[in-house]
Image 1 (spheres, helix red, strand yellow):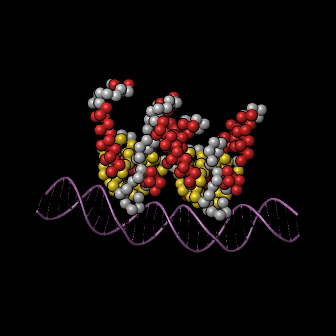
Image 2: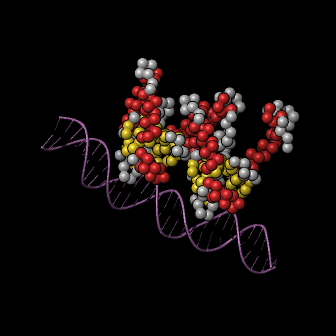
Image 3: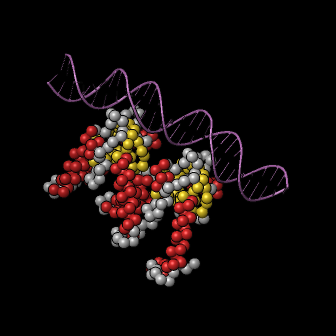
Length: 154
Length: 154
DNA sequence: CACAATTACCCACTTATCCCCACAATGAGA
DNA sequence: TCTCATTGTGGGGATAAGTGGGTAATTGTG
């Protein structure tokens, strides 16, 4: 599972070197095959090992292509799901349209989220993180928690 | 299965070069035979490998030709289904009436959707994607999710 | 049967991708 | 502190992919 965050740089060719600690695992378990797609709600990209992505694909497949909302989900997620294979030096090439969507500059933040990574522009990430913490503290006690969060213990 | 999107160009002769990564598979599994038809709800074309299309055809055949809605579906899909074989350099020729229906210009976006591709004009695709994402974000939390989507976890 | 129009094949050019090597930065061990 | 190994970064160059256009073959039509 992935956790923690890494500051990386995107070079002029759009390549991103994944942290060395994950390379062996990604190679042995998924032949270095990764899927990168866009996030629905935030200006970042999602990076899945192929095996993880295929589970999502199965769920997507079971959605109705006649229901507009479900079709939309299929189209956004699947339509942007790009196969990004690691090259022999552990780098992946992010296509321009994905970089654009997340406004990726040179400085990148790679964030581990268990079964996937999130790819953020460094400054976007910083801003969002600050805003999220602020929101969380401001809401403390005042906003109703969802059922699942009621039982959440750290 | 097909996924991800590819920016391609339609040349003056109406030819579209499919991504090299799929050509071998399409040749060995379907002798390079593809079926292109129009989409029911969106201004794009659908491109099926022959084997996939034949499954659709069976379903269409089982519909009643007396029920107006079902008859309409048959007429639209079947009536526009065009055989598009790959030539020896991996290109297919899109007939003019199909190009017109999807308002295809020079810049094309080929979008993988599991068992088929969607063929969009690049700007139409961009606009639609932006609108879809906006809709998705605006609805977040406010609109009732279908049962299937409740359990959807990325 | 001849002609025009369309389609397919072929070759050439441009662009993008991948592999490789080199260097810089970092951290570990002697 | 020095050396060595590992990781991250940058860029040249071979190779493949995408694109455009000429020409031959095929099809359909009068």
